[in-house]
Image (cartoon, rainbow, N blue to C red):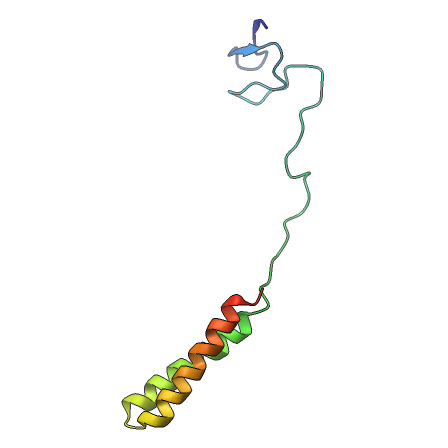
Length: 92
């Protein structure tokens, strides 16, 4: 294994390297593999997002009702909203 100069930047590079670590220029005659394959980005949508929103709204309504004096109804709606929110967090 010998060191050679990169044709682009002049950095010392191993002769077995496929590309220069400093500038990325191709060193050997073999093509440099491209990571990711150049495909377009993929948009990931979580299925549980709508349940998270419904649960969060339930928690907010429950807190408002609890604060205004409707402790039984507010506590129940808040608790159910929290459970729905947590179920939404675990749905992929």
